[in-house]
Image 1 (cartoon, chains in turn purple, brown):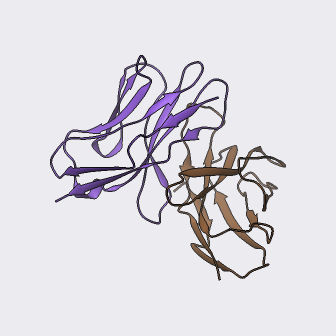
Image 2 (cartoon, rainbow over the protein chains, first blue to last red):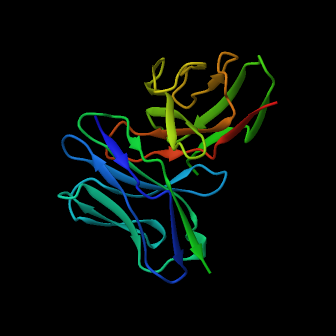
Image 3 (cartoon, rainbow over the protein chains, first blue to last red):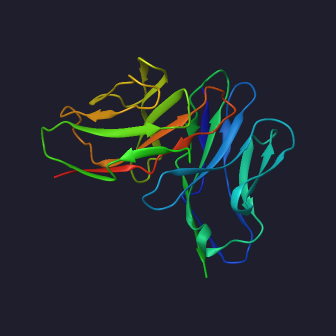
Length: 113
Length: 113
């Protein structure tokens, strides 16, 4: 079985400060990891993915994520937050022969001016 | 531009009525999915299809039905057997390769009146 946890329902950060949205996973075999962003009343948009290779993955809108195999984590990061980054963020994992990804419950990011 | 289109954006259903949500993609993706999103519960898989004329139940298929007569189309019918249908419904598509993320539609908000 595969699972993903986003331990924070909400993350608050001041504009200009670095942000981190946490994700940990459990899967057998090699993981395929994804981050998505959802703005109000919209569908999810793909941000970035880790399949193999460099542990630091760069994605859209200045976001990046660090894959840590020993800690089974894939935290989303951005060096300098913008108010427009305020949205709901979802982590997802595929692995262990499962074709269907498992999504986390989502983390609401609020960036204060 | 390639993409995935959901319609309508808002839908109101009377008690005992069946309604159908449309999902069309022009990305030439083999797989299509329907998710239900409720506040604080993340995404729950209703049905998915990897090939025309074939589909599988997800975690919460009761009270829903789908068809996949064309590669481009994957409509979802919310039947009167679904006792709590008020939610945000998301359609997605992807290639069959597990290394690819999903492309989501912009969603349909269904409300029971």
